[in-house]
Image (cartoon, rainbow, N blue to C red):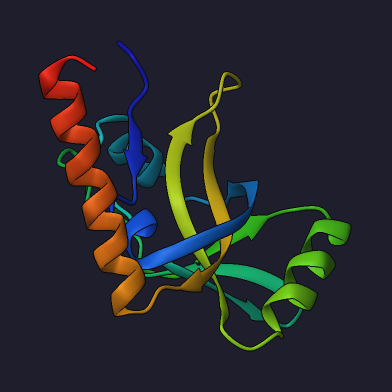
Length: 147
């Protein structure tokens, strides 16, 4: 069975992606089982700092269907695991106006641990979003015509 890769499809449309990092994620027992089945979403997921640690908010991991009363809460905040130097670098960058941290991808690494790709991003305005749609349409037309 191949490991699922869960992507935030809206990220490229809504944001300019500047830097990307791969972080470990602290999970409970039934959460990893749901991720392995592909039952998670990254829509509206963002990161924030709390007491010097980076946390992920808004990621939905569906309850495990064979879980008991010990099942996890689907939308709880989850701690991300990064080195101190990476955390300082990210925190310094996000203090600038207009920058945010978003989750772009969730996957299972070769080691068997769940990892999340996070990105420092800047929001697009309406004109930038229209430009993204034009590029996407143009690429689709070129692929269809065989160029």
